[in-house]
Length: 249
Image (cartoon, rainbow, N blue to C red; front, side):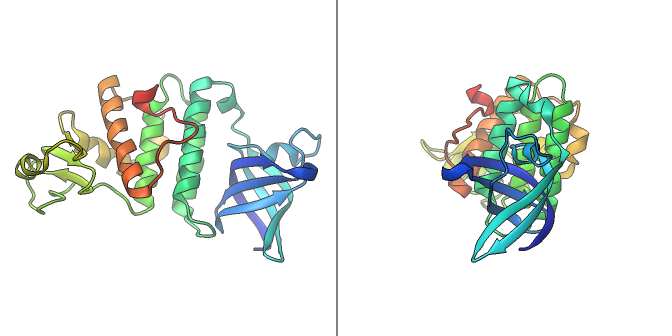
């Protein structure tokens, strides 16, 4: 794994002896764990590059199965995220989510680009930030192969108008299937606000085009609740430490 790569710092943990363990989402190698003696509060050019939210360039060296960061430089600091409590909370959630979603040492360059764009757009964002976070979660799930089915009934396969969203079936379902399956604990949600169109738009639209888009409070809360259950069911992510997801705000 020796070489230089672009990366996004997802997490940083201090260990004994001044060493820090970084979780970095890299373009070439995917998610990696790497140690470094670069101190965050030092005056070196590399110091800022070991902070979360930073898009940087990292010189890596692998020895005896362990990866270390030899040097680093900032490409974009995304400094503006840390100065806004809502942006900081939503980006913390996004990075913790993607940390659990990604496999070690498995490159996903398309998702890397989406994540970098998400941080760029979030830093520029004015107003509510929940729509951006929701769009990012939907797009990340799709890139990982867990895109919700929206073209036909996820249960019977018929191309009928969607009547509900079934977490367990993996997408929208028709009225007949919804009636048959709907019971306590079934994780079925009625579709009453154009969920299909919203999901399609989120999946198909580049992240940079979400700079000014905002969902209504009802749509944001309901779709956020559905995607939270959906990601928990398929990825076993559960409640994250940085929990700030739509209906919980």
